[in-house]
Length: 332
Ligand code: NDP
Ligand code: MG
Ligand code: MG
Image 1 (cartoon, helix red, strand yellow):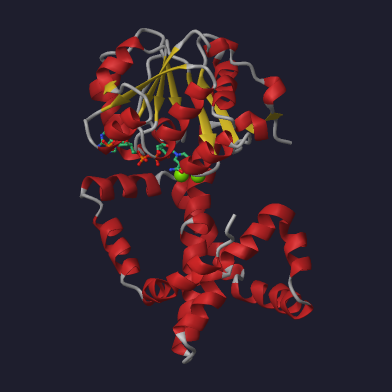
Image 2: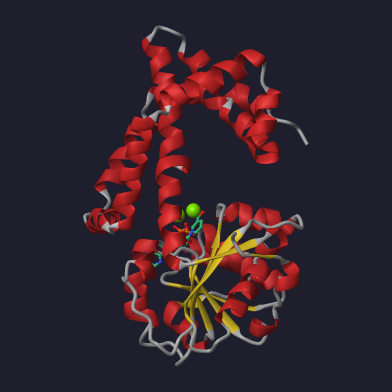
């Protein structure tokens, strides 16, 4: 059984007198910097350039500095810049400027697990990985809640790495929900698998395939959109609140029977074989290799993919239905 920590198991003490450098002020960076500051911790925002993030950080009351200047002062250095950028920033700005024994903290295990960053043996290396988008990490915190997270320790010369990881988790609000202890390997591989086969890739392609099937059969795209894409939120909300059992109780008996039988017919052994293949590609490091190469070529596949989706019939249909969707949203 997984080890779970909550607010009572975590104290801010191990980090309350430390200077915490948050590198990056995007999805996670902004949420962490604000939450840690609101938790009474000493945060400095470090950025590479005086661009959009810089402006946003100033607007939020921070005085951002360049990465190397943040790193020089920091006892704890948190990497909240894109995974593909971290190793360059580490090599050029962090490693040459960090205090001996400063902590290196990650929100995802990619760079450590795939050995793209090789930290000094004198540093504690640990992870706090929120299981939700940055905007939600901030939103839940301001409303008294927290997004659950995973914590892991890779290097622990001080013997205090786990306490500090839990302190950071508490500072961003995650222990209000609960934090599970894991390893860099487990977090990295499961995070990649989840986003590829379910959260980002799987769900989107499932919805798109269903939409396209209906449209090809001659049904109106607007009707198909409501049926196979828009209603997903309502179903997922019920799963989030009440689990699959609660969801199955909320739908008609006809939907229950159809869902329980046809779901397994569509998502069959063949699909699971492909999921295993996806897992194998992650575990062998092949996916990481492929993604690094894609990134180094300027991410052409991402660009093409985004363009294809933006121009797709699904998105065109959504644009037509946007007013209906907006008008229907709850008003409070
Ligand atoms: P973002 O893509 O939001 O990071 C953007 C920030 O990084 C901005 O401050 C941006 O500055 C800076 N940045 C972008 N490119 C560069 C560059 N080439 N050099 C230096 N700085 C750059 O990152 P995320 O918050 O999405 O991810 C950060 C970490 O958190 C990753 O390890 C990720 O895996 C992990 N994570 C992310 C989650 C998410 O929901 N997004 C969930 C859980 C973990 P500027 O504005 O100047 O470009
Ligand atoms: Mg994730
Ligand atoms: Mg991820």
